[in-house]
Image (cartoon, rainbow, N blue to C red; front, side, top):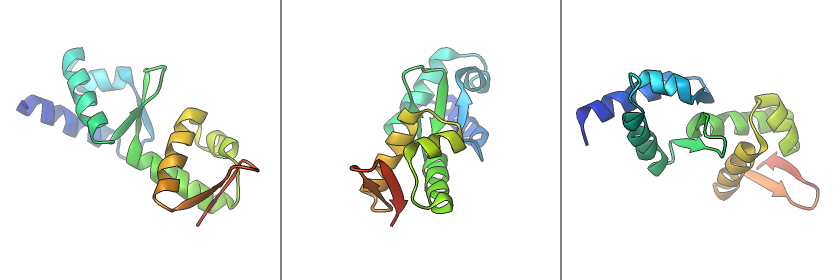
Length: 121
């Protein structure tokens, strides 16, 4: 791996500080307009579960920041629905569902499939 790759990954990680998502345009700027370099960076980060990319592909989500934000929102709201989490965080339902799956596997939340509610454990 080239040092330019790791420098760009560091810039991307720094840009994600406190952010749930960044646009592909923002990330391309961090890669000095080099879309091939950006693609390698995103592949590297995807392989390590550092980011989420959804079908539209224009918005890249930071996995760790999302996990924290979704879990904190559940603790704040108490027993709630995925829709309420989507609305309060401003993320698509596919992103919320992905993060809920991670949190459930970690044993941090309980999904109530029969009522479509979620709560912290």
